Image 1 (cartoon, rainbow, N blue to C red):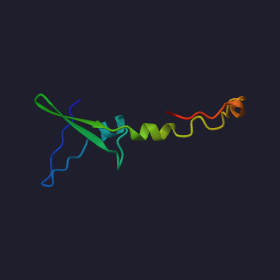
Image 2 (tube, rainbow, N blue to C red):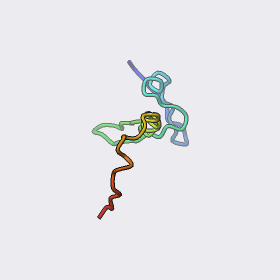
Image 3 (cartoon, helix red, strand yellow):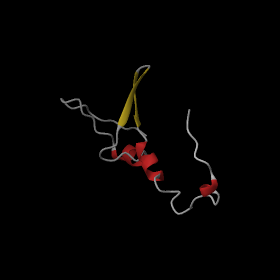
Image 4 (tube, rainbow, N blue to C red):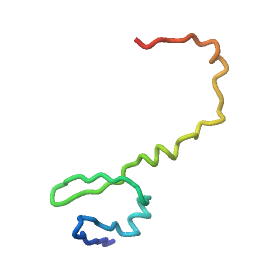
Length: 75
């Protein structure tokens, strides 16, 4: 698989559609750039994975003994 792009005069780079789709990179996805020997590695940041988990435990309810648990202070 050969994927190439061209850097614009503003320093912008288009990520090929095939890679965007495979890595779930959409408009607004933040990416991280790492310098590696001989080049640059680009990684999508995965905050969206955390957002995808939001609410996954909803509806499970609280443990039955939650009202009997004493309040605890963190020292």
